[in-house]
Amino acid sequence: MSRRTTAMVVSSAGTEFNRRDLTIDEPAADEVLVRVEAVGMCHADLAVRAGEFPFPLPGVAGHEGAGRVEAVGAGVTSVRPGDRVMLTFDSCGHCVWCVSGEPSRCVEFVAYNFTNGARPDGTPTLWDGDAPVHGNFFGQSSFADYALARERNTIRVPDVAADVASSVLGPLGCGIQTGAGAVLNTLAPEAGGTVAVFGAGVVGLSAVMAAAMLPVSKIVVVDVQDVRLDVARTLGATDVVNSRTEDARERVTEITGGGPQYLVESSGVPAVLAQAIQSLAIGGTAAVVGVPPFGVTAPLDVADLVNGSKRVVGVVEGRSNPPVFLPRLAVLVATGRLPVEKLVGTFPLDDIEKAAEAMKAGTTIKPVLVPS
Image 1 (tube, rainbow, N blue to C red):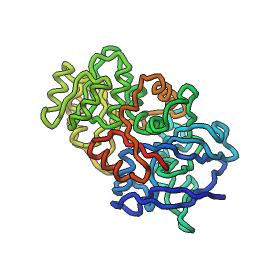
Image 2: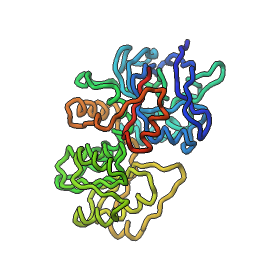
Image 3: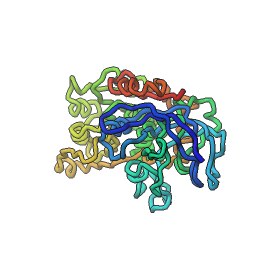
Image 4: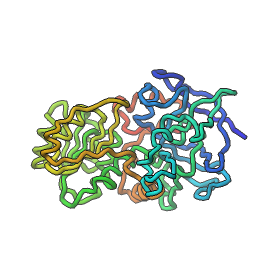
């Protein structure tokens, strides 16, 4: 069985998203078919379009979907048709990290989210006539009217968040949980600690929102766009630094009295990463969440790293266990403690290229696409 769906397809690297009418499979035993009500746009989606990520093309990106369950496979028990859900990253479910409750460290994370372009067993989920189209991006490919996800990466919206719009819930599945989780799950700043965030995109600003809920003494945000720094202030930043006009390392060190004890690097720019690590206080920890194209390296001052007893930790998806963490984030949104709505701007799905330009220009921090 199958049904028709409209999807935004990238035909080849460097081409625009194009609207196509495709066929999507009905759910297999462990799968969930979701009617997409909203889907956030993230850097990873644009990296697919540019050919910078190892996702096979032609294919459908989109990995911050939210909507309602349309149908479930025979083995699905956690959600049922009609439930509102959030979609997030996929994971194998059987490696040592998945069974330990840390699926963001899944041994097969890259295959399940980037490189397969199909189900884990290799079978396609999307079709253009008789020709398969690559899907299953982050276990969903939600730049479409319908997305086929697995039960593992389909999270029911808690009742307390019933009134929260899907346009706000969608981004929780990747960008928000990445930034907030880097602070709450990985860094866990102690009372009175100092926090710096390099990069004020949606991930960095999510880190700011999370840090603002904690009893820290300083939250310093570094970016090159004043408009984003202004937003950072409204979300709880105590100090901001425009690195186009100031020396970020020098200024952050000065503001924090010797360097921040906790740092989130979300820009994905290698030179910024090196500068951020140099700004850390002795014994400080940097959570690195920004991802440049695969294979890009960064120059690090090894003596500074060693002599400063600094820790650099790579963090995927906020080190989140989605069935636990995403409902908690939804509750924080519903109760006003995590004002994600301040970052969101909505666009019709057909205006996906306008949304991409708005994100690139910084006029919209988190574009969210709404299928018609």
